Length: 249
Image (cartoon, rainbow, N blue to C red; front, side):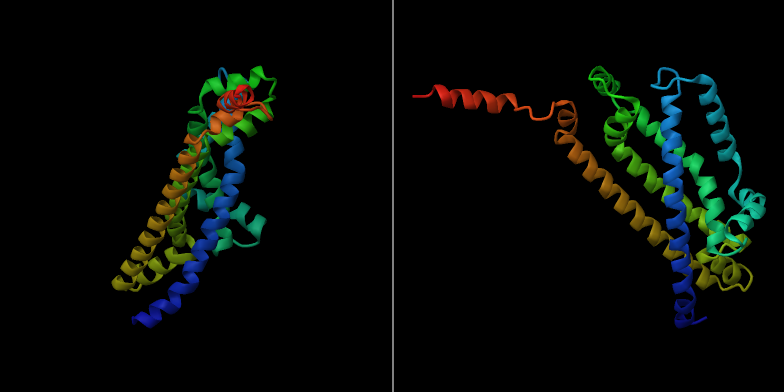
């Protein structure tokens, strides 16, 4: 197979993979983020402590994480066909990708949120902040670098899953690798696809690391101080300087 033939096949397949991973990432974040936060809030000592609910949520997450993705795809064929109208192609693969990644991402979110300083939560509670205010103004902002790192890890996992989806007609680069690299013994083409996947994963990791460093650096610039400082307050150093100016001859 010539390079021109490879390019002609890899262009649409790459776009399918990006669409598949992008749609699954959005769905995973929208559903996995509140699930992960809820696991923290309902745990022992949490703001919404409810051990039975926490146990049920934890069991569901653990069971979902233990199912191999290839089996999950097959088990969800009927549901996928009902939801998107087909069981093949990148649109169909997005459904099991999202369902399989939600519990994985939820556990990462849980870990990131648990690392938030408990003292900040107690300070906001002392100022009369509601649970929703604490989640929105304290837990999520303070855990943001960890959450971005979790999203990065999830995207890379979804790229790996998307390649696996090619085994059952999921489309994208995984289907090309199986159809041409395995069934037609186009070894060079298969390794070209592997190289492209490595490049995509590397770019995602670099972008995610940059975002985490940027957020962490901004957090060191006084994010917590701004959180606890009343609106309209004047820093003590500035106030002292103003007083000196007033008493100066």
